[in-house]
Image 1 (cartoon, rainbow, N blue to C red):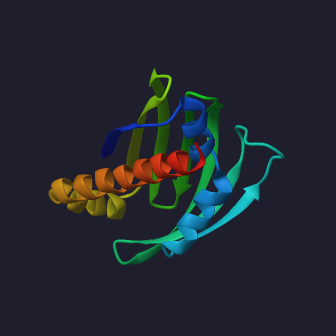
Image 2 (tube, rainbow, N blue to C red):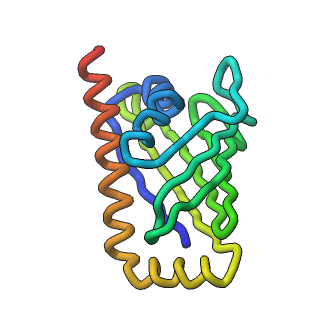
Length: 155
């Protein structure tokens, strides 16, 4: 199952990439939402190979996933790969400079079931695809608005 979202942000591409690649802030945000995250492999600066161990509630059950930063190409893209017992997930972030002060953020998340139970769970998500897609897009829009606000406050 694939989710996509695209938002235009009133900020330069370098600023947007710096915000998206601020992993410490993202970790704090994840913790505030009730999930657990811990860096497993840390680098002195952001680079491919960074790893996190996460656990979160999904469909009424606690899930664990190991997330790896697969590619890191400043200031245009990065991709992550998550591996769990029942689900795998690929997540990519792409940035395109529309002008000097405007950037397009594109997110793609693909969830892949690894067993029959996970397939049934994904099937139930497909039945509610409209609501789930709407929530995903609203979360991305909120994140984009936060980045715009941070840029406006420091510019």
